[in-house]
Length: 343
Ligand code: FE
Image 1 (cartoon, helix red, strand yellow):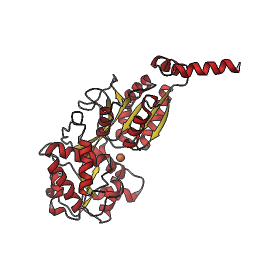
Image 2 (tube, protein in one colour):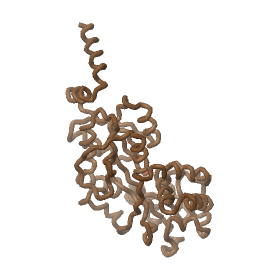
Image 3 (cartoon, protein in one colour):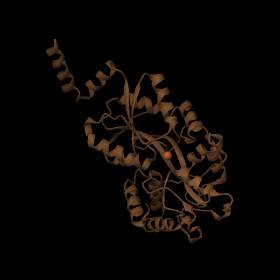
Image 4 (spheres, helix red, strand yellow):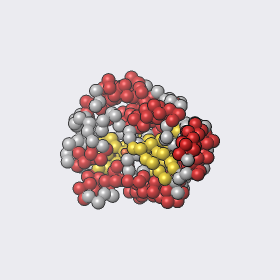
């Protein structure tokens, strides 16, 4: 009996290399989805639980930074258990795509134009605008204009921004390279370092809190963090959120920069059908409404409006940064940050 079991096991392992047998064995076992995610929100936990309740598909979640997850996918190769990769910015998804780590899939969504990779290697879940949060007591809105202007001398010792290891900043600098070229973008990074009110530390919410405590006057942050502060249970956080005004830069020109958070199916996803169901679930009208009101991100669904906190800042023009055709922008940005001494 034991011998037969061992033989069966050997047979299963021998077959597990082929796609068909993988899908067959999945259907006879518990349905699972292996998720590698850089997202770090309570909202995801709740959304994933709803997915499991509705579909019976259990989620195994691995959380880490995008670079770490991409290296892991690369190292694991064909044997990777991962079905999907979720990042907080599309530049990282495009990096994974250009490394051949993702595959094209057909998912039914009602995403806005531009919020699906042209080759369907990834689908956006949400987006966030990278805006200027300014101290309403010390800065007049008429003083603000573009990201580029933040490198000018009038902002010396007044700017708060997180470290250059942040996907959000790498993507913002990519957009400046895309628009102005590497020379100007490099000088911009140096100018921002010179204008910093302090060495980069903490996340986006910490920059706004630093404005509230008088450390600096301007912060470059993502909109959803301001939404989270304004809707926090902690009165100090609400107060910090109320201290700042939100300014969408470059509205006269190319438009403001956004960070797209999205999901791609991995090249060798063992549970591809479940991965597609997951994309369709996350981009569905009800989950898009849930994200809008819980994590204060912009929905990608055509029929879902942003939360009223976010909508109150008004509509804005988005830049047309094309990562898909420019996968090396990200590496250029990282190099320029290093050269500028932006920690
Ligand atoms: Fe974030």
